[in-house]
Length: 478
Ligand SMILES: *Cc1c(COP(=O)(O)O)cnc(C)c1O
Ligand SMILES: [Zn+2]
Image (cartoon, rainbow, N blue to C red; front, side, top):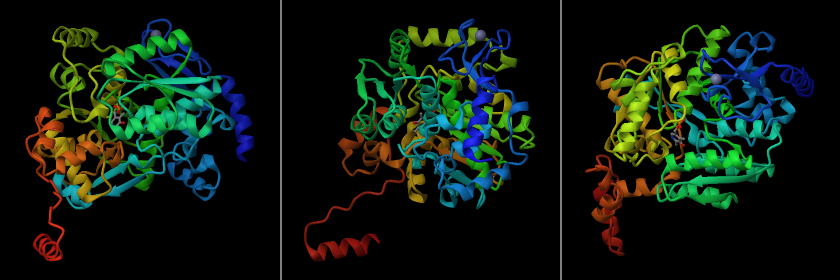
């Protein structure tokens, strides 16, 4: 079928209930039209999922059937690493789909990093989501949420952000000129790489005297009051786009399911989306087993670890014991505890997708671990030394894989995919401070985070401006 025919066929089916929004809480189970703009269930306030009547979707029989789109890369929707899997997220008619060329990412077999993690040769892979147009995995989700916003006639879109969501939203707005971006950031924490994107792309940037969790509360109030479309990962359409990261991992492994997916956990959108992706692929008979999922918190923002690993909070068929999370949050509030980690993209204490992530952990027999900023930065240095590099939050996945290897939970022969969520250049301050020879600079940026050493620093060599001295230095150090 030509894309135009497919588009009109899908338009018809979408409007007649092929895709819909459904409350996560099985006791409520309310559903809503796909064209409605919501961030929570009207009836019970729980999160929403995007669901499909799969019996009416023309899903390929085999995942390998998606390869037929490879020869049509000149069509923007088949070039997109998200929309060439449209049949697995068919909530929008193809003629409404927005793309800027997201999802051209790389799964790299990473033996240098694999050795650091403790894996056998050829068993560790890095999924470089920093290669997206705005430099982070957020583009996978943003093109989907932006498409829904466009479908529903939105003129303005907003988000609270530790940086990458705002960079991504601002980019979609500037490339397409379809909407105006309004972004909320906390004070001080956002890295320059990310802030510079939002500013240059022309987003209205509102800096709140508070942290990410504060900005998140405010943006929900403001978008409700002003009717601005909200694109945070509480938006279920974001997660539909983020499912495709897993499709591309499978594609790069020639449709074989790895043993482990290891991902950093912040607002828990990615981990939730991955679980949903595998649950659906299993339901559709496109895979016959799911990988195990490891979600890695930073030690300074470890709500999921505390709730899942320490307090045994579980999905429990959609009825998690909410007293456990309420008590935990009350305790955080009474101690005025704030998230604190060099991995600013996961510096979040109240993950909005907590319950969806519990479901993903249930589906994928998951584990949760926390890693220190020291472990994150050392892992990040190793990722850079062996590959394309990443920002601090991303390296939590590699540090977490190393920890799980040490604990004997990951076997050296397992096939492990670590998700590198953001580009190396997003946060140069952390990288330069790690490699600096200036102890004051090191202490200023990293010392307060409990980072005491740069185990894999590659320091610049200072030499006088004299030929002999330069030659001597090169011979000495190379
Ligand atoms: C947003 C972000 C995360 C956190 O992902 P969640 O889906 O919120 O858990 C991790 N790393 C980077 C680079 C990010 O931008
Ligand atoms: Zn509900």
